[in-house]
Amino acid sequence: MSGLYLWIKALHVVSVIAWMAGMLYLPRLYVYHCEAAPGSPASEMLKVMERRLLRAIINPAMVATFVFGGLLLAAPGAVDWGAVWIWAKLVLVAAMTVMHVLFARWRQDFAADRNTRPAKFYRIANEVPTLFMIAIVILVIVRPF
Image (cartoon, rainbow, N blue to C red; front, side):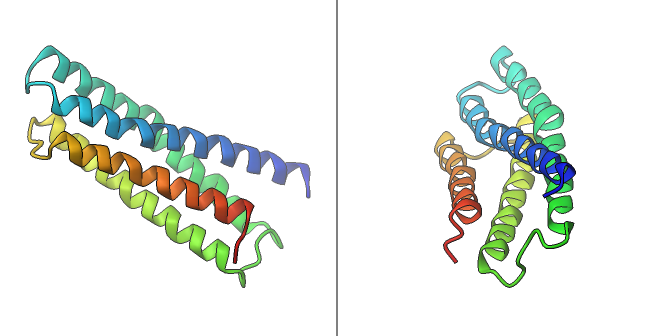
């Protein structure tokens, strides 16, 4: 492998870690936000935290993940496109992206004081990226199929 490939791979891993850190933390903020009265100082502080987390960390990290991951996929001979694991991984990455979009929409609801979902909903939603992440790591490292 060329040195450039390894740098791209390292940057991809760093980007994924940053994306997942945000994806695991944002719904936890939503749980706390459910417990804060709309318009309260706590609610207003959580709005700022949620916006900054999404715009300054999660969104750029997702873009970087796609850029570096795309470069890895484009490297000649780096991926066996006949293997099932890569396709399963890409499906899970697409599902993680859907969760990202949903989290962003829910942030807009909180920003406008329109949230109607209970804290339990966000506790459950908080587990989804974790399950996707575990499956993706197993697919990439173990390559079970």
